[in-house]
Amino acid sequence: MTSHTGRLYTLALALLVFFLAWAAFAARPWSRTANGASVKALAAREQRLHRQSLAVQRIVTRRWAVYRAQLRHRRALNAAAPAPAPAPSVRVVTLPPLTITRTS
Image (cartoon, rainbow, N blue to C red; front, side, top):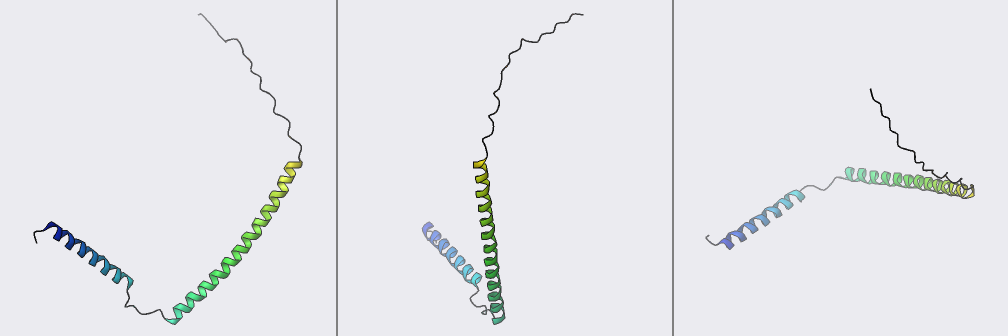
């Protein structure tokens, strides 16, 4: 084969066949189906995780409700508190330069 395009097409086809075979072997279509015990264990675990997620969601909802109530209370206290005294103004003082001359 002296044609460069023929070589490129052959290489592309070989790569395509290689990756298709790789995907087929990775999928393992010849493996047995899962047995009943593992499927039942998986279903039980799924139900347990679902119950746990619902419990966690209830806890988070309660905590958010408490936080929002405390935040409203804090904001009400801040709104009712008297305004703080203004900060004292800053005085700028200019002093004469400090020069010390000593002779020995």
